[in-house]
Amino acid sequence: MNEIGQIWNLIVLEPMLNLLILLYTVLFSNFALAIIGLTIVVRVLTQPLLGRQMRSMKAMQELQPQLQALQKKYGKDREKMAEAQMKLYREAGINPLGGCLPVLVQMPVWIALYQAIIQVLGTSPEQLLELSQHIYPPLATIAQNALPINSQFLWLDLGQPDPFYVLPILVVFVFWLQQKMTTMPTADPQTASMNQSMQVMMPIMFGFFTLSVASGLAIYWIVSGVIGIVVQYRMYGGAGLRSLFATTRSPARRSNKRK
Image (cartoon, rainbow, N blue to C red):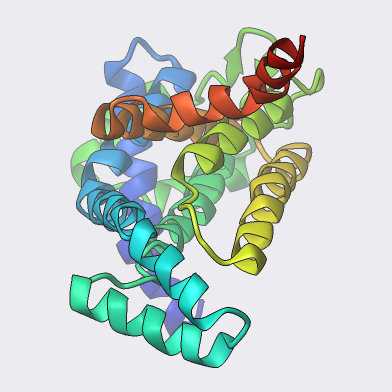
């Protein structure tokens, strides 16, 4: 194994793998509950970054009147509009790219969780030997009593994709709702169009991934998304959901007014 692989195992994979086994033994030998517990731990550890992202989004929403004024002032002059927009962000202490950091942080978590699920659920002698090399000595006895891990949960084998496509549908819905609640309004029509495309493409992309990855990873995505929606709701007081439902009801309201 090369040096990068050793660092990856030491810093990312092994802590997650050992935590999964520990949670499995604590949470009634239920691997789905262990994944949910791990999701909560990861959300708590990354909350400072996510909280900063949400505060930045809230601040950018408060800047919308000034951004709209800049849009009217500079019209189609995109260069001057971009300069004035960045100046406004600097004065407000906002980093427009700050929202990308939580996603970049979570990507190694997703990869490591997928690898950990596959390794923990191994049953062949070779797989169990490979797994034993990553278990911390204090957990060796616990792991020996816990293995092999029961991968069954409801109709799912948590190491395999969902055969009935329930999880992909849930992943698409949760990601779409979260994207809808967290997308920042913008006065720039081109940016607004790009945001709308991302609201559709991102959920579909993750739903497509869910068709071929372990169900355990899909459960992580769903639970993490639901937690994010709840945190967003508490922080914004339901403003994101109200705007969502207002958007979906607006055609009906307009038709009623015409009548």
